[in-house]
Amino acid sequence: MSTHAVVVRSAVLVVLVAIVLGLAGLAPAAELLSPPLPTGVGSSGACHVRNTGTTPVSLQVSIFSNNSPVFMYDTCYDAPLQPGRTCLVVVDLPDASYAACSVTAGNVSKLKATLEIRGQYPTAGFPAGLLRVLVAEDLR
Image (cartoon, rainbow, N blue to C red; front, side, top):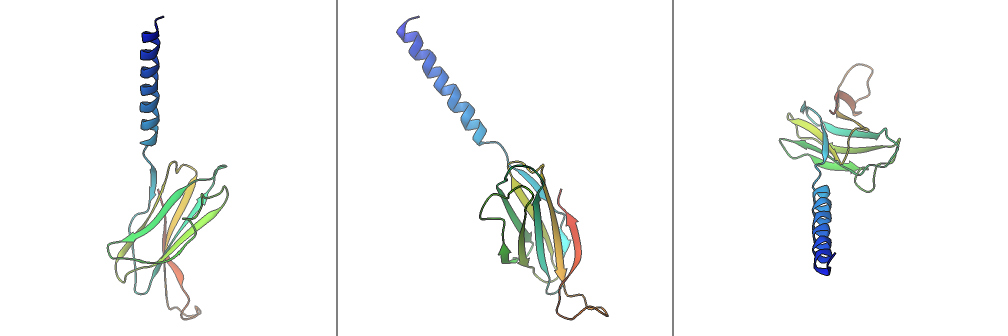
């Protein structure tokens, strides 16, 4: 084989490898999403995410609303979620609105997540000022 043919073959191989690696970087992220849940007056939202797999998962969790929620607490952002562990995002929610939770990762097949809307629900025997879960929904 001539030197020219070897150079051309090597160049083609380098281009093909670059294309394959470039396409691998474009792989779409997977998402779990809750349906929108109604908020009350003075309610908060909590999105719990558990890794049921055997490997750590890098993920992004957000709680959003048609009005701006106010961030309170986030244990999901700083490192990949380890196997068997749960992380949590909590926000103050706008009054009389709707909220949902989104979990995005490269693979969500081993993630389980739940959105809870918490609020004061005055009933006999339940101490005033404490929050309880008013409605919850698993993300799909």
